[in-house]
Image 1 (cartoon, one colour):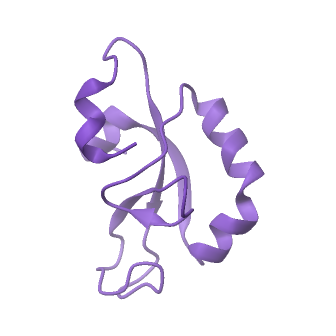
Image 2 (cartoon, helix red, strand yellow; image 1 turned 90 degrees about the vertical axis):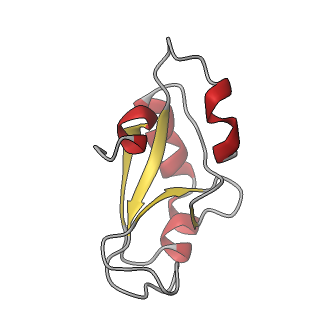
Length: 95
């Protein structure tokens, strides 16, 4: 999903995303970022992104996807802390 499409989501349903935090400044997965910068994960590239991200209907679906792609995720985002969060919380800076 693209960031510009967020308004098209049904606000009555929860939407989950995989959030990742940069482990340090100038992280190899996001050159030039600051330490602890927040990103969502692009389901196509399996890398941090600010404009494209995967959306899931539940926390369980998100975790299932993470387990299915864990090797790629770890390869593209070494040392990162990944966790499923509600999209609304992430957008508000709470997740």
